[in-house]
Length: 116
Image (cartoon, one colour):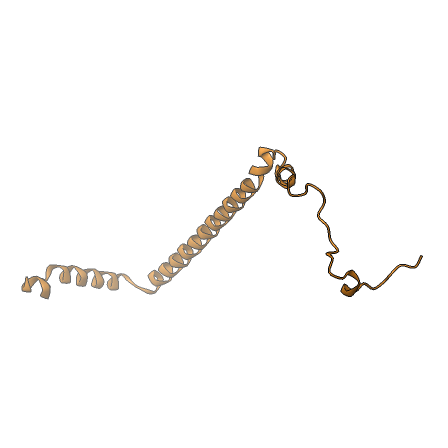
């Protein structure tokens, strides 16, 4: 017996080459119901991704907090170094002049006070 390798629609004529099995649509809902009812998923398996995500966000927040504290300490060190440099460049007479000028301007009424 020789097997046909090529099929054509002309060979089948007007008959439909496909058939639906007996009682296919009558049992269809029951079969789909049995296929879709899943197994009970353990609670641990459902919670595990949420725990991983919470751990990841906690790690990110802690890392951000550490980096922020490092940045703040560097800024404070730079400010202190700048202040020490300024203090080393000034003498006492400049301090007194500055203090006296700020006290004198604080005692004088400002232009806005005279208007009101």
